[in-house]
Amino acid sequence: MNAFRAGLSLQAALLRRSPGDLHILATVPLYTLILLAMTDAPHRPGLAPDAIIAPTLMALWSTALFTAGDLIDRDRYNGTLEPTVAAPAALAQVVAGRICAVTATGLLAFAEAWAVGRCFGVHLTVRHPLPLVLGILATSLTTACTAAVIAALLVLTRGGRPYQNSLSFPLYLLSGILVPIGELPHWLHPVSRLVYLSWSADLLRSAFRAGPPRDLPVQLLALGLLAAAGLACAGVLLRRVLARVRVLGTLGHA
Picture 1 (cartoon, rainbow, N blue to C red):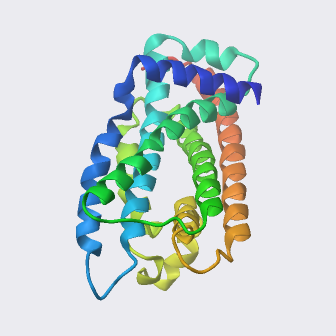
Picture 2 (cartoon, rainbow, N blue to C red):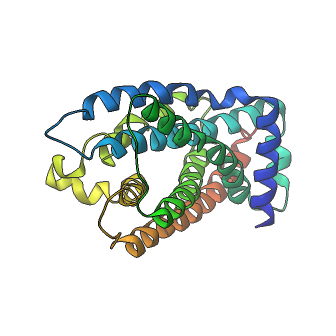
């Protein structure tokens, strides 16, 4: 955990110097307006929470995804990647901590989407505060651990931007953020449940529903398992990738 906290503190300090890394937040009001316009239908009431939750999850994943690629490129450019790799701390934990710092700051997207909804007459009632708080915390952690896997893979590449772009909107569709999972082909449903965003969306939505959140333990367990799997996968990948780039001598090549 020391490595995780060190990465968290480092990225928090970097964010204070370069707040432009959170440029994704500028798109949240626009996405919220678009989704609110799509859900404003009298024959489909109760969709307003989805229009608030979707931009939040989109911003969290986009911020973590682009941070995962940029921090490797920046460390290479600044010449700090080699000392970080040479340190005794586990690199996967350092990377996850750094991404988690950005993800935590990205939670401002929820406040943005909520404020936009209020400005346009959408008044949401949090019926179950516990699922909302637990969902936000679990989603932030799982986002960081999942993005750490992407960072591990991008160590091998000299430019990860094309890969980053291909992992945004396809995941939004697959996870049921933009389109309900029930509307997707049946053979995609098991695949959708492997995407942590589908569990996050269901968990956060349950906080606004009148009925009791009966699936809360299952949703939290799924997010916890996916977070642990992501961190473990990132650790294994980083060890193998670093062994490869050391042999090839391409660790610090930008």
